[in-house]
Length: 183
Image 1: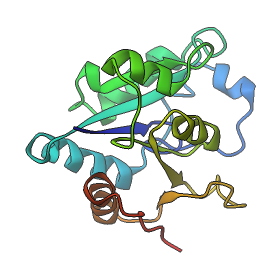
Image 2: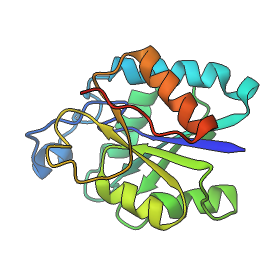
Image 3: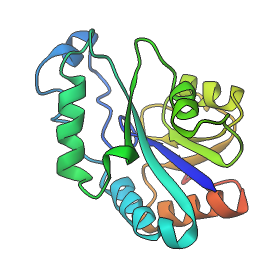
Image 4: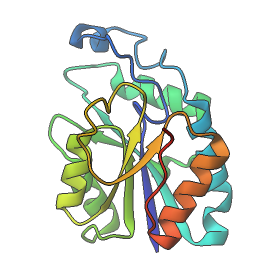
């Protein structure tokens, strides 16, 4: 079965370009992140069709409980506000202080990553780590993270419509074709 994993910060929620580490420590920071409506809309359509089409969905987000003490509670509140259709098992917080996303997925699924495990993420380090462990990685270009095009591979873009994102993700899931990226 195909498994789709989607990052939260910078993909489903905005990534604030000029934030400092100190900003991440402030109460309200994570809860105040604006939703990326086109990607959230695509996610909702994916959830609606996942059972019929035979794939699973999981939002994977890193939290830093010691460094950024509000990250856990505020990300849960953000999820409840913008993604209430997700079950708890479909929203997994990875302790970024001690774990990598692929390690957590292995512990959840009980198996190694393979090409049927697709991660959509905006952060190259996460994508490279996912690829290294056998998964399929898709770069989410969010307008501030791809000036040098330093990730070679499948791409999606923040300026694609909800429908374009949905269709590109379905194509990736079932045809393993490269996803288009808007210019």
